[in-house]
Amino acid sequence: MKMSILFVLACVLASCQLTNYVPPVTPQMATARKGQSVNLAILHEGRTLFAHRCIECHTLPVVWRYSSKDWPDIVDSMSKRASLKPAEREAIIAYIIAVRSAEH
Amino acid sequence: MKAALCAGIFVAAILPALSLGGARHFGFIYEAPTSAPGSFELENWVTWARTTNPEHSDQVAFRHEIEIGITDRLQASIYLADWFYENDPAKSGFTYSDSAIELIYNLTNPVIDPIGMSVYQEYRGGDRFFEWESKLIAQKNLGPLILAYNATVEAVWEGKGLTDHEGEFQQAVGASYEMSPRISVGIELLHEFVFPKWRDEEKIRNVFIGPNVAVRHGNWFVTVTALAQATDTPEEADFQLRTIFGFGL
View 1 (cartoon, helix red, strand yellow):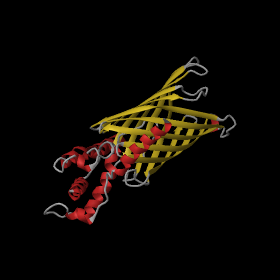
View 2 (cartoon, rainbow over the protein chains, first blue to last red):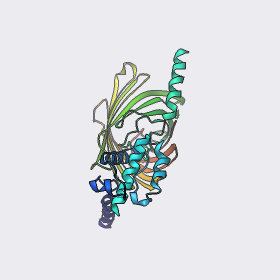
View 3 (cartoon, chains in turn green, purple):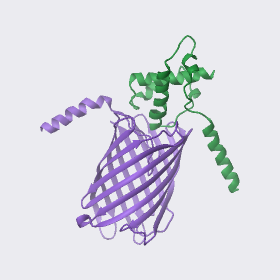
View 4 (cartoon, rainbow over the protein chains, first blue to last red):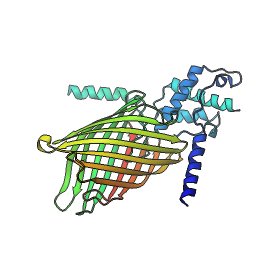
């Protein structure tokens, strides 16, 4: 009984850990979106801000939970409470959309 | 008058930039992330503690705290006032306890790095009372699950001439699962080693355990934790209920 509880717990933790909620920035992300290229430095900043500011209130969702169209509004709705400046908000959105674009 | 005017102008100048410092998932455990720079938040704590061994008594403690994000990694808090109401066979009434300043410096991130770490320092002073508290905060976020650990060392000087002293080492561990972006539920466990007169002759060990729930929306959050004593130490609370209500100004 004890072993099965530990096994289930280990599986839950492993499944949580296997998902990368903040994938590292790759050169492919900068050009993944058709017809647009993004500065890699902005993507790095967006990743850092996404991982630092958003977790002050809640855990991070996987980026494909919401569509690329929805993400700007979602980030906008919380940008004031996360003290995000306009450029920081844009960097987070750019990073999320770049991750999503690179996945497909 | 001039000072009040200056303070008013300062508050009016910074108000448009103010925002929530961050929501708490735990009532008795600190988390590694620090508040965003420029954020400004008021937190009110209410802790009800009931003791039945050796005598029945109740205490309701209040804290009013201002939390300020200084830089990306540094957060400062001012405890404007800690005060309490107590009701026991010997006395009952309100008492001012102390005020304090707290600093938290974030070292690593709980999502990107293997473990998120922060260091914490607090100085607290009141009438014939001084306390120094240091804390190491560790946290790991695994998707919707937050695991947190605190190791705390504190030293207290009190009484006339601050001649009475006591030390404490505390370990706290907690888990919080985010059911939705607005609601989290979890569990907290505290393990205390108390050293009266900075000695361990009495071998005082206390263990508290209980559930928590945190709700957040817009610019505010509420976190409630109920802890029961799993040991049987006299003069320690059998039951504690803490509520923290925070909102960005």
